[in-house]
Length: 176
Image (cartoon, rainbow, N blue to C red):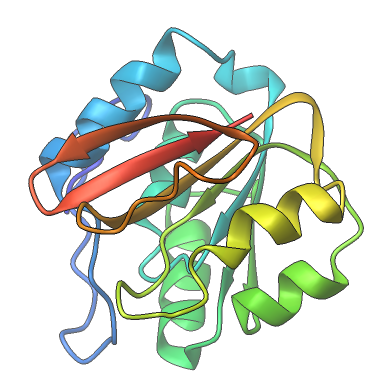
């Protein structure tokens, strides 16, 4: 896992091998951030990273200038790994939270400009993520939700669905 752009460009993250994660592939992450480069001002947004795992996406956002990133994962190893990475590279804008992401969504009251969710691909509740985000009003006006999921799963029936981009077995669905 490498950081693609920004102040930490080229940094390789080497998490412990025992973490229960499926990191976003570098080519898919690069494609995602190329899309976002044309749509957001990284230095002006707040981000919620759900199912953050190793924090690769959170670190990429921080590297590009995002100063408020809440990163939620229930695994203690992932939580402590991201906390240590944030400290090591002086990424004070990353706020790791050790919590179940679905329970966090049901209790959260803050609003974000961008919410990124990368749940386990076998999680049956993936289609509920957009409903929870929009029903709870967790996006600021003009905000965006991005859900990474298996390409075989379609999320285009949600009324806030905008588009799906496919990268092999992985897809990103965008909601506005």
